[in-house]
Amino acid sequence: MRTAGTLATSRGIRLAVGALLLPSCMAVGVARAEDGEMMRVYMDHARVLKLDRPVSKVIVGNAEVADATVADAKTIVLTGRNFGTTNLVLLDVDGNAIVDERILVSIDEGNTVRVFRQTERSVLSCTPICEQHADRAKNAAASGP
Image (tube, rainbow, N blue to C red; front, side):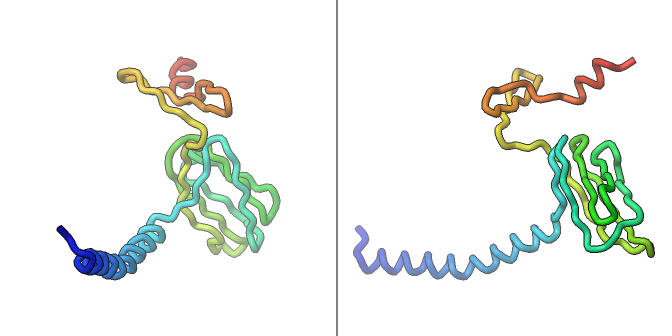
């Protein structure tokens, strides 16, 4: 049976260990966030990028994953096309990089439900009524040559 003194000592030790570990856990979290930073865009959604200086050239690594449109000299509209990663490079008139970012295009997980039937997977978009989410791979295969 534990006494009040041993419980207090045990709790004090746990608090001390937690206080020692907290800064190291926070440092690991910050390092991972800095290493893995990517600009996120949802599939079939647009994201507006406002720039501080005019852009001269827009380069998208994989145009099947994301598309960039110049709205005006200081505004770019980035649209997610398909799931995956790519990169976006924006150059000014002198050829200097204004933006050089990795892009992650993913599905908006909010209001979605995944249904698994043996080997087949379906994604339902529930806003508020659940409907089949558009599946580009199936549509492309069905309309093939």
